[in-house]
Length: 94
Image (cartoon, rainbow, N blue to C red; front, side):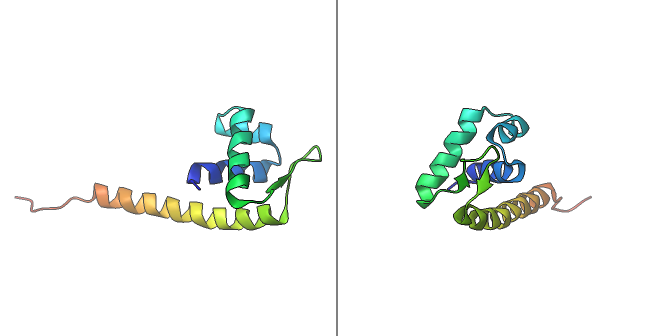
């Protein structure tokens, strides 16, 4: 699992569309589909029901969406923390 895949999955879940997610993320639709397929293989579950005109999350997909939200929030918090540490001034001023 990587956070890039989780961000793509979350965008598909939010938009209900592989094409819209691809457009929003600046990716191709096949790239988005590939990332979702990789996640489905990794977790051994279908995450998105593609049988209707609008993508719908399966039970496994809904569960992953919640975990993905928390993981991505934690990653954002970590980035802010690291940015803050990098930007701190240290040492003595004369």
